[in-house]
Amino acid sequence: MIIDSFLSADGLAVLMAVLLGCFVKGALGFGLPLIATPIMLFVLPLPEIVAILALPITIANIHQIWLNRNQWPILKRFWPLVTTSTIIMLVGAPLMVAIDSRLLGILIGLMIALHAILSSFPLRQFENRSLAPKSMNRLIIPAGIASGILGSLTTIYSFPSLQLFMMMRVKKDDLAMLLGVFLSLGYVALWLGISHAGFPVGDNLLLSAVMLIPAVAGQQAGHLARRRISEATFRHIVHFALACAGFTLMIRGITSLI
Image 1 (cartoon, rainbow, N blue to C red):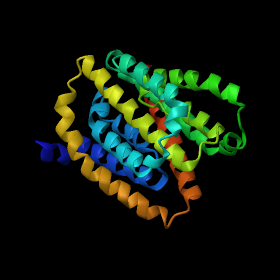
Image 2 (cartoon, rainbow, N blue to C red):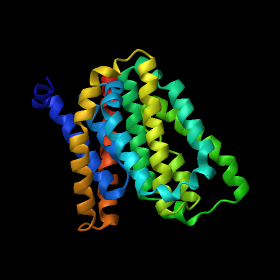
Image 3 (cartoon, one colour):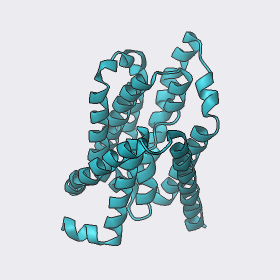
Image 4 (cartoon, rainbow, N blue to C red):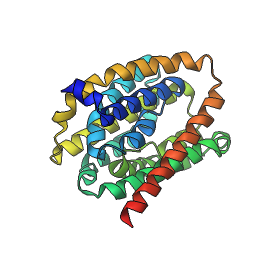
């Protein structure tokens, strides 16, 4: 059955989405759901995408956590954000099972395009700004709340927390540890949320496990490509592709509603 599904057009789209998403994650350290989700949305509903990507995303981020395990003290600083967003997604994820998939496509397209634009153009502004400790503490929980709400509806929950991490000048290794925990817990919460809402996540568990093969292969290829391709150039290419995918999803969703 699994082999037959791979031979279909939908199966090949899923396979290529995971492979490409993990290639980008291997090259940049992020990007699996951002790349894979918009591609898979053309052939699958969002809850099924969450079920399929659950194991590849969780395992990839656990590996990232292990590689940066010495940076665990950063969690003492941001645990309120991680906890808040995770709880909100656990409670709010059932919404994506009930909401019209066309509306979800528009929301996801908007989030992906916004993420790509903010990551491409004003990156230096985020990096060059710093926040006073009091202001930083006031924004941690609101950022977690916003990420949780947006993640519940779109599965794209890195915004605005990632932008806040950048403004706070979190060091690269600390950021890798923090994102590993933040992203893995978030996706587990989404998976549990849609499962509680009655979506048959177990039907996709075997396919999700099989997707670990292209996930590992893509991530390893991304690591190798990082040595040959300028990271700055590759980032611009990825962000441009994300922006195009985001606008395409929005246009597709809007035209289907008209």
